[in-house]
Image (cartoon, rainbow, N blue to C red; front, side, top):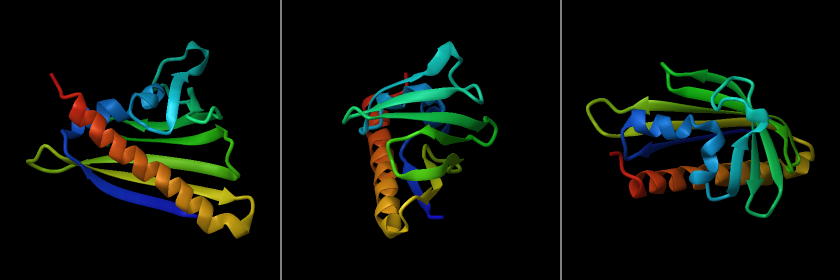
Length: 149
């Protein structure tokens, strides 16, 4: 089971960054690989068990279920319900770590999954890592272009 981990600093307040990240159904506002996103069945965004439907830039659809939200620790996790990727048992966790006395935070991104074709294990792990890294960079840019009021 590959595990992808990526930790990086974001140059913005941890609380503000958390507010953007925890908007589970609004990921298309800042992730470059996602052209549209929304919560299915009219459920509340951020409600454990809700499913976000993502339309990827190429048109493929991905559905993800929110498994856990911890407001105090600024963390959430989710799993794939349906994905156009040859992966099973995909679970991701996002955690915010405020940097003391600075307007910065560290985001810890972690994803674990099984690859259906073991010969593609390295390739699939690199693909997931690229999605995470590109998402982090785009989130940083989104925060910079949309400053807090």
